[in-house]
Image 1: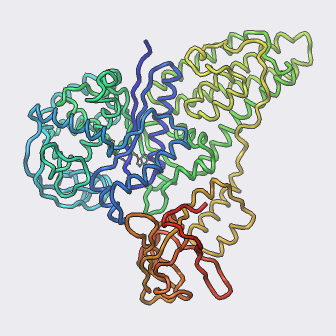
Image 2 (image 1 turned 90 degrees about the vertical axis):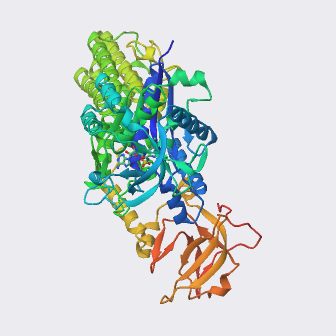
Image 3 (image 1 turned 60 degrees about the horizontal axis):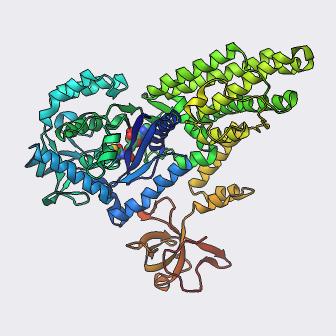
Amino acid sequence: MANRFYITTPIYYVNDVPHIGHAYTTVAADAAARYRRMQGDRVFFLTGTDEHGQKVEKSAAGHGIAPQQLADRVVVRFQELWKRMNISHDDFIRTTEERHHHAVHAIWNRVAEKGDIYLGEYEDWYCTPCETFLTETQMLDGRCPDCGREPERLKESSYFFRMSRYGERLLEHIEKHPEFIQPVSRRNEIVQFVRGGLKDLSVSRTTFSWGIPVPGDPDHVIYVWFDALTNYLTAIGYDSDEGKFHDFWPADFHVIGKDILRFHAVYWPTFLMSAELPLPKRVFSHGWWTVEGEKMSKSKGNVVDPYAMVDRYGPDPFRYFLLREVPFGLDGDFSEEALVGRFNSDLANDLGNLYSRVTTMLGKYCEGKVPDSSGTAEMRTRGEETVRRVDRHMGDMSFNKALQEIWGLISEANRYVDQKGPWALAKDPARADELGRVMYDLVETLRLVTLLIFPFMPETGEKAAGALNLPSDWCDAASLAWGGTPAGREIGKVAALFPRLDAKAMKKERSAAEAAAKDKPGDVEKERDGREVTLRDFARLDIRSGCVRKAEAIPKSKKLLKLLVDIGEETPRQVVAGIAENYGPDALIGRNVVVLTNLKPARFMGIESRGMVLAVEGEKGLVLLGYHDQVLPGRKIR
Ligand code: MSP
């Protein structure tokens, strides 16, 4: 019977749109999941969103909408990104789903029956952005050690989990299972923390209501981490589908970032011990990305948008870069220069070149058919070794080493071409056998490379498999054995898979785009010339019908008006429009307008604007766009 393999990503908060950090964890888990599937395992790969908690509640309030509405809006950004990045998750869990509510109550009740939950009073510092309580000793100069912000002082009635009961058992477990916390360098940090003594943990809150109520005491909502961690049980049927649950639990890997290791390697195992459930086999915490040497942050404006990376370079080069550039587990630095560098050297030169030269030569010297040969022992050994080593590295989540191995084989094959010179062999009929062996070696190596890169670059893998005319079951464990290409198979020429990028031109284009983003109309004009957009580009603009509900002048401003525009959301949007010279506030009330709704929020004269009302420059100034027939607010304009 096939092994089963259960791997998870963290579930992402919906108070923010996806960034490179989210993409990173998810791509890593995806590569591991795809690799296990190729090995024939029954894989369950889970990702999803963390939708409860004060953080989400506050953020929604800031947008003037209900938390559920915020979640519904942001979740799509994650789901669409995963589609575009070819993430192959088997389930996407949202903590606001009924199935999750059920599982959280089930585990809460089980822990409570154990006598591990009691009512007390909590007073401490709380860091809302990190959703975590802090003791005085954990704070650095009165600030949260993780995000550097000032925590709030909270005192409230709270249910507590008797975490203190489980410290010894947890230490024993960590000692007995050295693989439990990975990489090893992080294990010590957790051991120190647990040795310092585990205190009981506050697991309910009364100061806000966006969460799952405590069973039997709805004034309390369950602590967001107790709620969130349980997602790993919910999705595989805890307390609802016993068969599936026992099949997949315990998880093989929780893949997470280093910032949330304590929740996964201390809190989570103690909850599970209390509920008498086995612990996950491994918790792997990866490092963090900085951007061109700096910490990524909204205020610095250097947050890397994965959508932009996929648009610019394609999903595979972005995926490849994330896993190739930095050893999984260590911190790394992101820059587009480095990405373009890898693209040109590893993908265009090494990989793309190998596909195109081998298939071109096969066409020229072997009539496009695989020769009747089994290749040389030398290349066979090289190929088999690579497959073995990649397997070992994948087992350790050493993605960059696995990729180094694969690229070692690619370089070897490129060298082999230069060394053997098939063009010379082809000229000498007495060396036809040798030509056959060499070409077989090369075609077979390409086939193995195609399989090995597939978990990292699924689109390229599929494309190459098609070009090499591989059968439909090309991507399984048996196919990883040398010798799978039959003689006589017809193979067409593979066109350049990764045409080289012009780093200089791209940099120029980027700075122009950045200037445009800074809202310099002159530069925007320049940018527009000669640049075509695709329908996909256009579809990124969310333009909707709107109706002005309120309009007022902004003191000291000749041009600006503050509008509240109904675009079908729960409350009208606040938009600042530069139309005061052409329209008085009263003339606008009830008027139909066209609104760009997903423009990055900006402030004008200290007033927040979340969108843009579209207008055309007429002879005598701006004229608002509108429509004649009756249209409800919030309809998409296409
Ligand atoms: N909701 C919690 C997880 C609950 S899991 C039961 C959460 N969500 S998050 O959206 O804030 O972050 C999710 C992941 O993104 C974490 O693994 C975190 O490490 C990762 N990253 C956030 N910023 C990052 C970088 N700059 N670099 C790499 N990963 C980073 O935490």
